[in-house]
Image 1 (tube, rainbow, N blue to C red):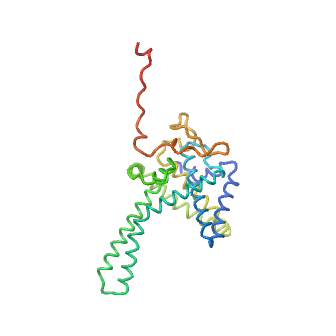
Image 2 (cartoon, rainbow, N blue to C red):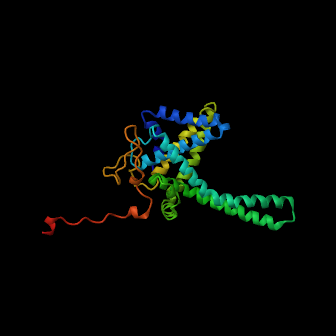
Length: 270
């Protein structure tokens, strides 16, 4: 995994200023029109969809994986579906967390109610445990959706679990790096009179997409086009539409198996 490349790949694109500016303006619009409620949601969906496009381009082996701002409808749809996927994944966390809050409040009002406090503590521990599991599984969920583009792919538990277990070390590295990236983005954004946050936050999202795209790839395939690509996937450019989801490499274990040997030709049989 090339962490340095994920931090700098944005600036390798000839139109990186234009693309970064558009992403920053979308972030700014979400902040300025937060009172409308709908604008922040739409902006968030589009930015998440753009990040998914980065994941797809990296996994396709594009030298310049920063997508063009052209498929707005596709990015909006991708961001919306992935957001709903994560919302559904978070439902157990919400269901467990809310009773814990109620019981904690009851325990606070009645100091003698040790049972409520104990149950609340147990529910809190379960919430933390599930939150950590979901946090670690998030890259696999995102990658799985980016491969198929299908809503149901975010709930293919066996493939997601298999992928997470296989690349757990890489995922932990990505999580640690993203924490550092968020700190750097916040610090640099504040140094730029605060307004820089809208651009550094978007840059952090792009770094996340690049790192997610690298997880599970063979060495070298994430940074340059392979001589014999595993699948005929075209990166997202101005001239080409977003690649078909079915063409991307699959997370499932079956995709890792070697192809069956070809039948011998007539000359060899003779």
